Image (cartoon, rainbow, N blue to C red):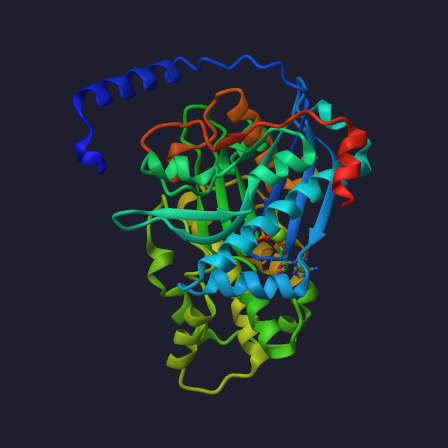
Length: 413
Ligand SMILES: Nc1ncnc2c1ncn2[C@@H]1O[C@H](COP(=O)(O)OP(=O)(O)O)[C@@H](O)[C@H]1O
Ligand SMILES: [Mg+2]
């Protein structure tokens, strides 16, 4: 049934439901202090797992685990992510395989930390985005990694599918980390911007004034094009510390062309993905450049693009930050960080200065979002996603309460 056919009775029921939620009725679960966040971003590098303790004060990162994707899995996922055509059996198989991997990754984290699973209040799994289309008559965002398997393997209640509820509330489903950034990095004394450089880069604007809106949006490409170009030219998975880009020279006419892309001129709320800033996207602009460029000059230009697009976003919407806090894998690219420092006239620092290691911020955000959902509290920031109102995010997959001995037998199968 289409939504324009909903009868008055259903509309009334929906209104009642919204009111009961608006009062913030909590499920009053007895919460354990530990939560696990599982994150796998557009870089398709692997799974970040973070065990976070939520006590009286700021969240504390207790332990972490990283599970890289095998090269053949990365190839399979890239095919699904970069094309508009995928057969249903491949999708089903990848969903199951990733669900198992996420579950085992959470199990490995627990084993490492020696925290028994019955002390963990929940797992928040972002899943692997394979398509993000926040526009059109029926916008959608698709993450895979079957959460039923995570709950079954770990015995821990799992929250997943965070983005689609925000989209149903007319938001873009992204970015979702701003509410967490606000909870952890806000200061009453200075204006801050958080810049997360994953495959795609996104910023969160945290004004010091409490009544100002928290803004957050995708500023453009982060590492995705850098990874693609070095893979294609040198068969390497990343440009370590930006060394290859450093050997080239920024090609200013190409940079101007790339920065002229309409995405950079759009006002927020806005979000994007690797299906937009794709190899085809780069190919179209390269085809418009008159000279034949050296591959390392293209890499240098792409690195400058990430730095400049982030700087433009911060300059337009960042409200003169007193400092910019950087997280995500891009922080390890020294050339990129140097370019950001040269562009911005405030300190550019790692989130580690505020106690959260930059590699684990996004995974910790999904631990926090799972906790919000299980407390029946909203997790989105409507100013960031464009949603009509705050919503409780995700679907809940109840755990069956395994003891740790059972967990470790299951995860070693
Ligand atoms: N030492 C490094 N030098 C340059 N780039 C790096 C380095 N370490 C990580 N990266 C970049 O960070 C990416 C992973 O970042 P991540 O935050 O996990 O992104 P995502 O959230 O999209 O998965 C890698 O694909 C790579 O491009
Ligand atoms: Mg990653």
